Image (cartoon, rainbow, N blue to C red; front, side):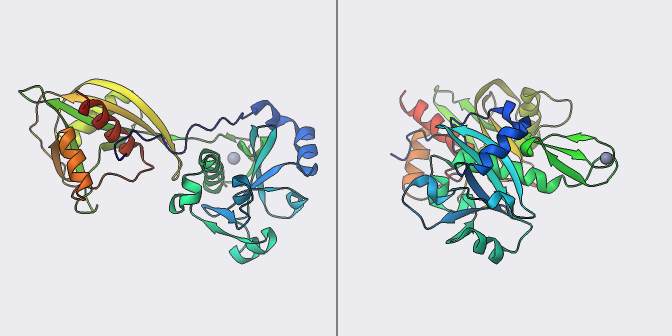
Length: 312
Ligand SMILES: [Zn+2]
């Protein structure tokens, strides 16, 4: 069913992050040496995918047999799941060929470009590893004194080697908003915009980053005024999504506009149109309307709104 509300991709894994173990050096060493730790290889924004399809988990991870001792890899403890311990393993310091040779049969792929990984039950675990290693990659130097930093606490902080300043992984919140309006006849409509530089028939919700000193609701109101010139009310939180491409947290809202008169910021939004739920359903099935990518929370918000409003 096209408009069955989809799940939110990249969230929902029941991994126990067991953060108390990050400082337990003895446990970490013993576990890594035990031959039972599951390693998730990573290389420059890509995950390793193996040709071993005997179990879904074997496609993107392997049981460690001494690989943790090789030079120049970064290891991060991710957590435990079903009594297995998961570690991310970053090979970015190596040439791709060399990393592949160490790992055996497989290749490095972008999570979002592969159906196998993107739809995997374990996709949230892979995005977690990706987010963490991208943060490491971007924080190799101290933001106070400029000297090199080093990974500590099993890959969950970096500490400056000169001034001891501690850096913590961060996420950047952004709001993503579906604006709705009731017509004179009480018929619900929602506003979808075509983003500048996007595909001709692709329409989506509107979005923007949270600025310093703002609450999420204030960001929603400011961004909607800036992008489409609408004052919005009744701002309702719906759902959120980790979006580690590279480090966002998407916070999804529905908001209501009393007016339908738009003033577009053409730098951001080329065109914006009001659609009723039946129109969205029909245009999508005819291929005349393309919604945001299926793994985005924008798609989730639109599908959820259509599903809720088609029932009435
Ligand atoms: Zn420093």
